[in-house]
Structures are given as structure tokens and as C-alpha cells.
Amino acid sequence: MKKSIGIIGAGNIGKAVAGHFAKAGFPVLISNSQDPESLTGAITLLGQGVKAVTSAEAAKADIVILALPWSGVPSLSGLIDWNGRVVVDATNHFITHAPDFQVADLGALASSEVVQQYLLGARIVKAFNTIFFKILEQDPHVGNGNRVLFVSGDDQKAKEVVSQAITEIGFAPVDLGSLAVGSKFQQAKGALATLNFIKIG
Image (tube, rainbow, N blue to C red; front, top):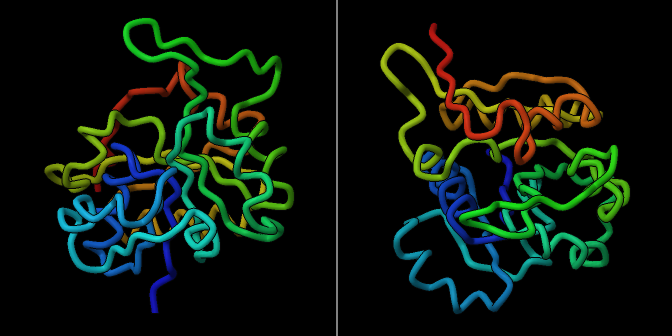
């Protein structure tokens, strides 16, 4: 049986990721900052296998994906006991959007390290945040290759779990190492942000 996927955030990234997992047969739980009923239209478009729930319910899935705005991350701290939970950080630390796209000043920390501070004990893996959503929602199979999704994290087993799930939905995971090093390449305005790579063969 496939692992359950809980997505906190039902914006462009959240819906794109939900669509891929649902198509691959994963049970998907998705939430937003309002109530499950507000997601009725989105659920209809995403199809079978996707259920609207509260954020606390989504947070109890086997793999939890954070796809909410950066400003919402602190509110997750007391949502559940995060200890041992595999959490994919798909956030970007923007504090403004178009046209300036300013990011929060995090000092020497990577944005995922800040997320780790809020979600104590969670096994954080950075992924799904580098590709523009209009590309992310497309078929990951491109010609003779697969679209690349970068992953980084400090828990090797958690990275393996997330990488396996990424492979099952048709993308090619590429491990960049630790959060302190790898996720800085992935995060907003990092060297790999917005770049779209295809792994051939």
C-alpha cells in the first residue's frame, strides 16, 4: 500500500503536487488556511484520491508536504507533535511577491533550517520548491528523460523515503546533501531556483 501524502497549502504548488501523487495512486490529504469545505472546487478538479481535510489531519500523513506561504510556517509549530515525522519543505522564504520578490533575512541559516526550528523533531527534506508551478504541474516525463527534483536533508532515511515517492510519480530525485549546504542551492534566490533540468536515461 502506498504511503499517505498530507499537503498543507492548497495554492499552485500544493495543487500541482497533489495532482501528481493522486495520479500515481497515493492517498492525498490536502488542507488550506480556511476549512475543508472551501476546497470543494479544487478537489473536483484534482479528482479521485484527494480529500480535503484540516491542517492537523494533513500533518498526520506518512509524508507531509509544506506548500504554504512563508508567513504561515510559524503557526505549524504547535499543530501536532512533529517528532519523527517525515516533512517535505516546499516553501520559499518570500516576504513579498511580484515584482520585487524580497526574501526574509535568515542570517547564515538555510530556510529549511528555520523550518526545522519550528517543527521540532521533524525529519525535514527540502524538495518541490525550485520549479515554477506551471512546469511542475506538467508531465514529468520529457522525451527520453524525467524532470529533476532536488532533495536535501540531514536524515538519510527520510531522504530515501521522499526520493522513492518522487520516483514513483515520475520525477528524477537528485540528492544535494544536508540542509545547511544543499537546501541553500534550492531555496528562493539560490543557485538552482527556477531551473528546470531533465535527467536522460
